[in-house]
Length: 610
Ligand code: SPV
Ligand code: MN
Image (tube, rainbow, N blue to C red; front, side, top):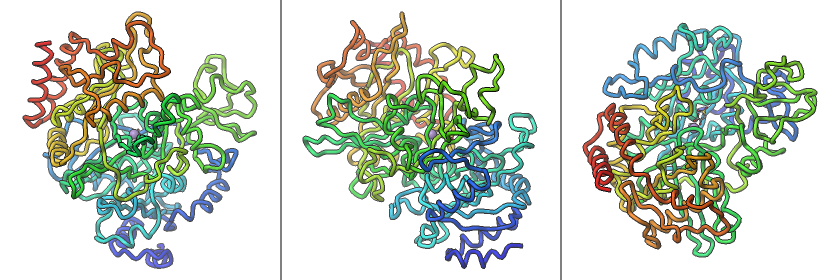
């Protein structure tokens, strides 16, 4: 048996509630050793992992990790939210009763860390000193060392964050046990993996994966699922899968802040790290706060404020390059200590590569291994077109490495939110941008957010896979209550933000070309929104929001084919009427407040009369 008290004393871990929790789970998991870690241990832990072969060196002091080949993404089917109140059961949260879920996981974890070290990671999902600190502290226990190195990049890690808590008992218990990855039956009827957020006990129990999205418990499980639940339980805040960026007008010295929800593969990371287009760079500066999560609350003056609870970026590597995301390329350059997961690795030159990093893969195949660790030069003819990197391969790097990180990204007071945007990937119907000033209509728009089904098998062509507020995989309680909570929080602001829906992906129906250039030019749509909110432009009303007039957008340096701009700034009423039927069906799954149905009917009526 480990002498838990001795280890915790030596680490200076004084919080009595944390000590009791560590002792309890050390006994259940049966770990041979316990080690309390802080960010200062990073270098030593990296060295140990390199020696153990868990990490491989990448040029310039960076690192490579490969996860088990059946363990490369979040598993939504195996992820549940458990509480003791059946009213928390929603459409998307895979609700389970708390008692049986805790019992099942305790049994799976019993003795499962035998022979291993249990790392104790005290962390904070917030800048230190924030008004939401009571919801941000956690202690992850993990039997996987690379999880520690990733957590050090993604969160604030160290005993000081939990020793100094005002309410010593207010931290999330987050237990991660890897399990025997080769014998868990991933994807079969007898799948042993289970990832549970026991929300009303503020406890996270994840068993059966070492992939980031399932194993870095501060990120998805705590800062989204648990915080989504805590936000409503406390009545104080919203925790959303949103980006957060700033746009500074150097002429007026004003900075605007935008948060935004985008379903996966809709360009959220690229937008969050974008720069101003060259033509507007003298006047505007875009700054980065966060690519994935924002917590929002109303301050004492009635303003909506937000911060990014994370300290790093866990980004998709695929298609990251100078053109799509120069900020990310900078943030993972030599000298950043970035960790790459499941990309291709050259064991001779210690380089990494992924699809879209360069136009073609390296010509010389010598030394290259694919994401499974198999030699690319040895591939059979029929395997030659297979990707080198896993499509969900990732890079992990702290925000401080992002070149345009906002100077105040670490400010515990957060920043004032001027706009809340939603954006899907829609080939027709959705204009470039439509502004919404009514709060219920804005929340309604978020609830009907979706991404187009990519394959015919996923649904009717052009029909959306709805992803309310981009929170579908992270919803912690019933969606109607979620809508009520949104109306309550945003409705209590004295200066409510403007809402907007954006779409960078409209295509020409004939030859399929994109009508809008995208990338940095997307900032132009946001600039219009901020001017609209300030009353400097008025736009044109439509049944689904206010659209920009062409002359109100700053399009300096852009070129359009005939008719494209008109299409980007108008709506196809027939397509919208069709969409309203799908929306009705989608919303009927939830126990929605009347305000949301009223917003739906208002939009439907305006479309009928258009
Ligand atoms: C997502 O999947 O939305 C992510 C990455 O942000 S993961 O941590 O894998 O969930
Ligand atoms: Mn995400």
